[in-house]
Length: 361
Image: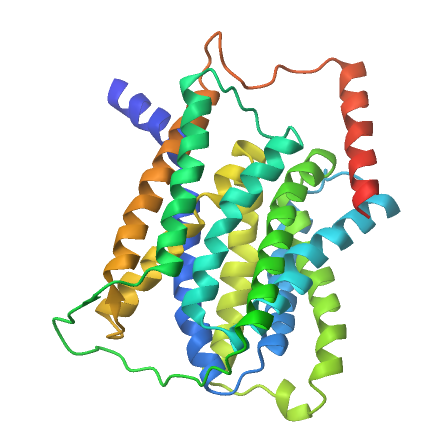
């Protein structure tokens, strides 16, 4: 019986870690599915629109039946969700996929890993992330973030010798032509990383006012899908761009909508509420590492020693940050976990959050 209690306690403590790892596995599979779809002619902006509409319809019944006690949706809260959807869905993803036309998937996927460091800095500046420079846990978070950023830099700028493929590719995917314009692509990538970081931070603030993850996931999908549709109609006029058949394009939309825009966004919101936005973003490099390994093992793509070295460094930094944050939640006298607020303090904190979001809108 004691072993069962110990296992239950360990699962409860590691639940967020396991969920975020599963989320990164889901994103890893998404990379290969969408790559195959785009190579078959799928318009990336149409894909984003369809994907989030599917995600909204998938999450709608869960939100309706499982969150009947959700907070009232006011106009102020709706505009907050509108901005949240713009940052995390329509604006960011459209810039992200547009940057792929001008650079390369390897460059973009590596740059996305800087989101963790950007989110950490923004969270500290906004006092959403506690940081004690004198405690071991505070130092671990700082050092871990810097180490992860160093690993990302190595993965991005240093290739090194290629690792010899030990066998033939198991699956062949036809490559797509990259129209290189590194300045334009780099600007789009950097801006998308910044807006993505702000999105993660804003999620933590919005969840305090609207603590209904299923409903918030549904709203972001529908609103973000509508925003993306307005933009996509302006750039994709041909009906053929919107036509769907029973092929890889349809399966990529269904997978992206159900798994990534539905389930994974819900997981991220839950983990953001439990652990904070920095915890969630620190798992982003896991997907990059998994993509590189699978691309090497299954698709026969080249794997460079720079990617391996950088990946190992990123994992070390990730472990340091997670160790520091786990210590934050320990019930000791020095714990940084905030104490429950009194009613008046809760009202004041709520007003502060409203002012912050109002400023962003």
